[in-house]
Length: 91
Image (cartoon, rainbow, N blue to C red; front, side, top):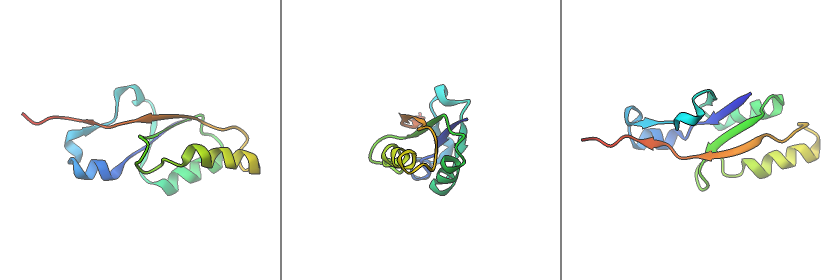
């Protein structure tokens, strides 16, 4: 399955009505917190994980998923992509 981790801080700062995920990830299931993201990783069904840009919550997921493969907690490492939220400009 394909998942996208929401940057809830950015949604809060920019008012969620003015904030959108990039359209290229519209078929991804939204994960609203890091705990749920970890549970999905352990479930082993994650094929692609889209996380906020480096420096925001989730920056350590690539190394964390590699460690999980080494320890045998998951069989395959998910493909990792990054995104930044689209902030709608007010006129």
